Image 1: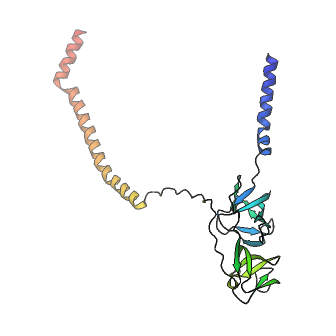
Image 2: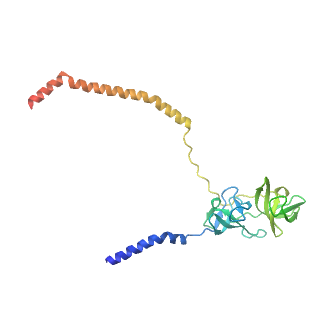
Image 3: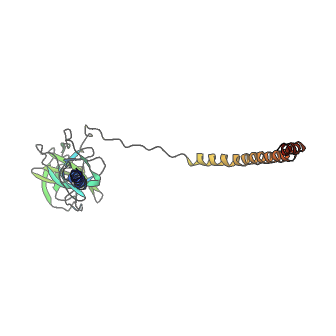
Length: 246
């Protein structure tokens, strides 16, 4: 019987030791991440040194790989005219989700050229290489915006090419929040006003001397009463009678 007990004990100890590793091994992998903050950037590299564009708040990106400090993600689900874009987001800037989000996962917004022509640039700078040119009234697939050296650009897809277009050459995208509401931040109660604290402390200071005086008077009266009680003549007689009785 003692051998069985020893075997069970050893088995329990072994399970306890390997449980953390097992739990990590079987932990559910996140498939989606939600953009819950403003100005969350999609980067072209794992080091987050090459900005692509800011992702739309309240929408989702698909997690392809979990790295040390970033998620490798896919933006868009490959809808017609909106091919997926691969990139990286910082873990601290995205909220991983275990459930599949409601559609649309990412907004499929089209913007229109308002000038005679709009040049799609390889990079968000005026001197960058021109990828393709869109003419007036033609529509571009919008992905996000990026502010670079004081000028705003839109990252778009047109004619089988990705590129940046100046915001002044196209209409502005109108994008509503995702149907799933964002969690509201918890508002912590405000600490009491310092002025109120000062007033309370001042009141306490004013009340403290009066209380101390009353306490001193009470102690003096009590001491005087006890002294009188000990030395009154009646008390001496009582003591003599008591001694005689004994």
